[in-house]
Amino acid sequence: MFCLSCGSKLAKPASRCPACSSFYIFTTPDVIPAENPKLREKLLRFYLACATSQELSEWLQDIGQDPKGTAEEKRARVRQHTKYLSMTPETFPLQTIHYLSSYTGDHLYDLCQDLGLDGDGSKNTLFRRTYREVGCREGWLYPISKAAPVISKQTVLPFVQWYPVLKNYEYEKDYYKDFHEEMSEVFGLHNVHDQLAIAYGNTLKIDFHIGHPQQGGVGIEFKMPINNSELQRALGQMDQYVSRYQAELIIVIIPDFLSPAQVELFLGELGRKNITAVVKTKVS
Image (cartoon, rainbow, N blue to C red):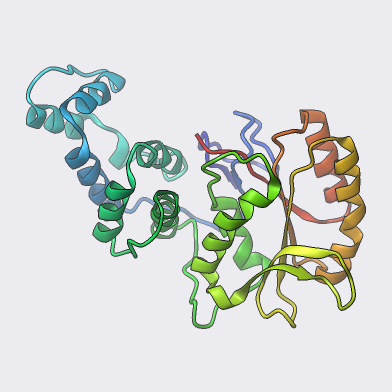
């Protein structure tokens, strides 16, 4: 169990890192991330090739090195002194997010091509696809067969936790499109169903059902309450979701309008019902 923001290892399950207070937590208990030298070398080579002379100077200043010289001299100096290739698996993801965030869609298209990935999609789509590939190649995520995926909370949860929110939205529904796209890429479009009624004749719907719509599946419900009244209403719906999905339920909390006390209340109530919760905020 790790914090993907600061790299801390968590001694016990938690929704927030005790070291840095980040919600970007990865709790899959049996994951053993490991350095992938070929991947890291390919990424570093791409970063260096794309960097302008000014960007190389700033990079050198950030790592405490002389920023002067030709572009080629700066690239050589960055390569000599950067710790990117030797970073621990726990600290590598956030540093990769930091680097990827500066690129245009055209840059990310080229990187996807270098990594053997599909280059279609928006800038954010390509960002998430690249970052997910980092997770797979460094051992955080297990490859999923789109043709015959094994769908359970155990296989879905790591991808929900790894998923980076790249933009803050005003309304909960605005988060759906990006998440639907991500889950469809992982588990196949035919296995991702949005706004599915939890039972025949029931007006309550689950935001995402992963799996066959008429079979068990995994339910993923987004909650972005803007006040205490909406928070209590969300909690009041949980028993119906549990009745449908039992343990195969994941609640994604977007806490943008909640106080820390309200977040803890929400998490505490979900915990008492044995419901798995993932808190999502914009990665930085």
